[in-house]
Image (cartoon, rainbow, N blue to C red; front, side, top):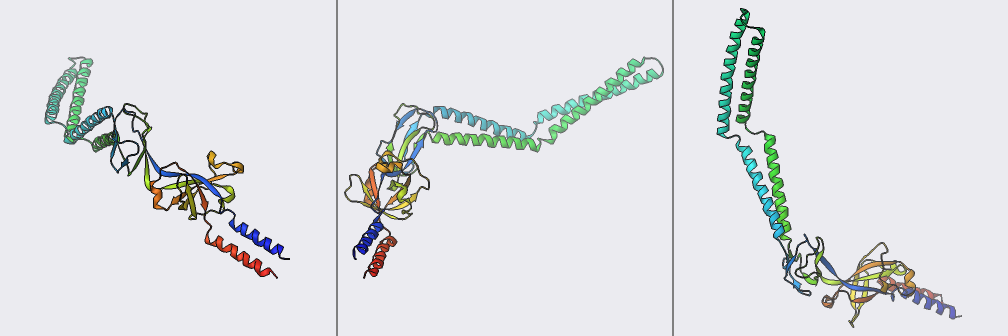
Length: 335
């Protein structure tokens, strides 16, 4: 009569332990910062080696700056030209130019008076029939041309004395601002030819050597940064529902005897590519979800990146309490 209740107790105990012994494979990782090449220039010198610890702002390498220095010199010339142009428009016309315009106006007015008197004489002669109408027409045309030349000279003099239009000054100011912005951009690019560490870390990789000319955008330095490493693991779909953010985990790193305690920091919501070491046996047909664990032990800060590891979930308090409750219910049903 007691065989069935005892069997139910064993099944309940096994059900409460399911999922806690699942080994989740992964690797130990550090946050990585890659520093790209701003331009395709020759590497002149390395100031660090792989494995060196660097501080923020420390010089890592230098690229050939000659080409960039030439661009900066050209941009500086364009700035100087824009400054001079704005000053020229702000100062207005020179006094000598205004004097020349006044002299031209005086000459045109004299020619206008002479043309007007000549036309009056020709008109009087025409009234007495002493000249042909063609002669009167020529004198009228000469008078009109003199009048037009006088008005043109007056307009030119007003243009010089009224000064530069506000729109022209605004255009010159905008051109100067554009030239200065271009110069600042080139100077920042010049500073980036001397590659410096953006934050404290350890040099992980230097893929190029002195004398190489890497293409623009190529990664010149790879830094491992952060206060501690983290575990990157892959969770099968069969246990994904049992793992939550903040769950406690036990991490076993290859080559380290004692396990580390960790907590789940994030779990990707979409299944991702799974490395070959996480596909064993029936797992090859499952979906895998990538997760990251924060390792809480101080000793893990000395470990390098890339070490293989496996993690196992520590049962939560609500899961531990569920099994005794079931046992009590089954025991209560026994005769």
